[in-house]
Image (tube, rainbow, N blue to C red; front, side):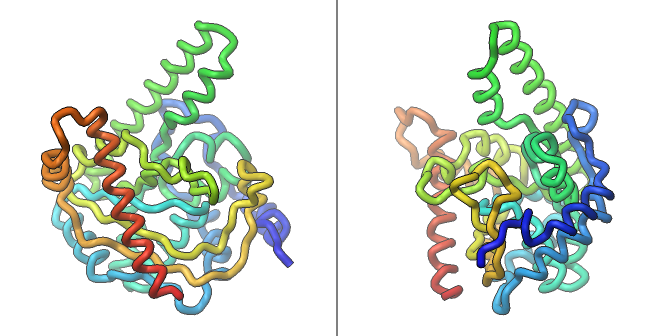
Length: 299
């Protein structure tokens, strides 16, 4: 019988809410949110419960090479596919179990870029999200929706100002992360992929700015997930269906961001309407190829 997170982990939800301490509202002063180790314990249980035999990291040598580059002072970026709210927890769990002590240090260096919704939509979702260090942004999709719902030009302008302020603070926070040797993880689609809705898997053109900000990156594909979105309630994250699955997280070879960007843009015609979108479309194509290759291994 299929069970949602809300049904299967009802007692855990109560316990995790009791130790949650992240802000309910995002402001310029709290965009950097360190991991809550008390809630992390519960997330590790959820992940380990549903990590089926055969789950693993692929391309361990690529994960290690990236980690060593960051330790040597390079500013590191992870771009990762996004299928469920356990993507980041599962990656960290596998790093810590497959790569030993260096994997634990690697995991602790990861800072995910997350949308405000994870903090503001639901206290239980917030408690899950705060298990991992994040820099919170005001996503473009959220701003577009807020502008559509605005009752006046003044409301629209105020929301735009709020978005600019929060995202500027987030950029400063990411600069601090880079100086501390932390790794920024971004989901280039900006949302979870919903089957039958290909627009949710399209990369955001804003990702081009990350390629200019960082030195090295890896592309991490995800095959298998213990959570499936309930398409009757796609916005209710606690309605996600939970079941064990073989999960494979694979890393590409280390990519030099600026060189990679420069070389690809040089292949575009001079009249390319949107080079930034073309750049991320190219990256998403690489994700599709890597994902297909790993799916053959998983099956």
